[in-house]
Structures are given as C-alpha cells and as structure tokens.
Image (cartoon, rainbow, N blue to C red; front, side, top):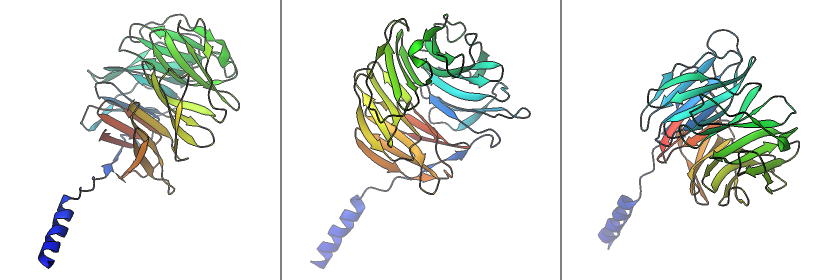
Length: 328
C-alpha cells in the first residue's frame, strides 16, 4: 500500500508542468537617450526608438530585433530636442514621426536593409501625432499645425516619399489626436478633449466623418490596432481597460486591467499582452487570451514598461532603458 501510494505520488509529481522560465530584459543601447516607442512588422522584425531634448551629444537611439534574434543597435538620424509621438509598421517597413523645434520629423525603417532614413512630412505642421500603415507603401498620417487648431489627415502610396495634400479634421479642434488606424481611405481616429474621448470614422479619406459613441468614463484611447473591422486599444479613465471591437469602433467590449497598465498590444482580438509596472516600480507583463489575463514572470526589468508591440508569433515591450522580447 505504501509503495503504491509513493508510486502514485511520484507519478503525479512527474506529470506536473514545469514552471516557465522568466522573460529576461536587456539594457538598451544607450541610457543617455530614453526609449519611447516600439512597433513590429508583420514579418516579425521589431523597432524601438527614442529621442532626447538635449541639444548636443547623442540625441536619438534606435534598435531592431529580427524574429527570434537579439536586439541590435541602429544608426538613427540626429534630431536635437526631438519628441517621438508616433510609430507604425507594415510587412517590412515602419514609419516614425514626431516633433522637433523646426517642425515635424519623419523617418522610414527598412527591415530588410536595417536602415533608418529621414523623410519629408507634409509641410506646415508642428508635429506628427499618429501614423498607420496598411502596407509597406500605403500609410496615413495625422499631424497638427497648432496646440488648439484641428488636426490634418494625409496619405502616401509610396512609403512616405510623397503625401497627399492634408485635409483638416474639424472635429479635433481643441483636442489631441491619440490614435489612428487606416486601411485605404477607411480610417478610425481617436482624440482626447478636456474630459472625454472623441472617436470618429471616415470612409472617404476625411471628406466626411461619423461620430462613434464611447463610454463617458474614457479619458484617453491609445495603442489602437485594427485588422479589417476588428480593433483593440487601451482605454484609460476610471481605471485602465483593454477594449475590443468587431465593428470598426461602433461598439466595444471591455476587460478591466490593473491601474498601472501603460501599454497594450495584440496580434489579433484574442491574443494580447499588457505592459505596466508593479507596486515597487519594476516592469510587469501579462498575457491576455480571450478574456483571461495571466501574469508573466520577468527577470531584469527594473523599470516600468511603457510600450508594447506584437507580430504574429513575437511580442516585445520597452522601458526607458530596457527591452523585452518573447514568443507569443
């Protein structure tokens, strides 16, 4: 009897699943310039970028990671006193945009040659607020010409080499655009006003707009990703939530997250990651499968994670000087 019981106990112990090893962070290429944005191509290459408000020395930092490879430093164009505000990737290309004292700046990342090169954004703006690339050649851009004036919407069909004449988005007057997702001329744009989120869609490249209802508790909507009519985003206001839509933003389902959440990223509606910080200020990550959230063990992530991105089989997250990558 005792031997049989011991055998059963050993069998049960042997069949228990081994704990997954912690996901290990690595330091960024430069602690002088903080990372601020990250995105992944659909082919699995991920790009992390940052800029500094300093006027001399190193002003920008960039790193890329090929699928299942290590993070590698990139040579980034100099951008003194710059601010990165937008990033978007397609199959093998990413666009990065933001602001600098002379006005907007725009970069293109080629995931094949692993190079970053400057582009010319539409003239007359002070910053690039949001980017969305439906393919390597077709992207959309939202910029602004003043702090209170309406944003503008423009499109490119040649990977940012040229842009259509920007069209004003009148409903963004006195609001700040926080998210953009476009496929052809169909776009979803979110903006934060004084105490609410504004969300509108267009099917004709911004000629007309349709206002969409959102909960009155939302104060911001960011990290927006759409796949045809399916969309996911991070909503903040009265807490943080992963919100998902199956009708291009007309209706949303909500999954409440920890209040310390700083970013979300999804490879589709049912596979997402949530990045943020622990009560002690270290980085935290969780995986969301459908509506089930599960914390992931981390090692060497000593700071909050502020950005996240996912390709089909890979997800990444960044802190100001830390990078994390894992299979999704």
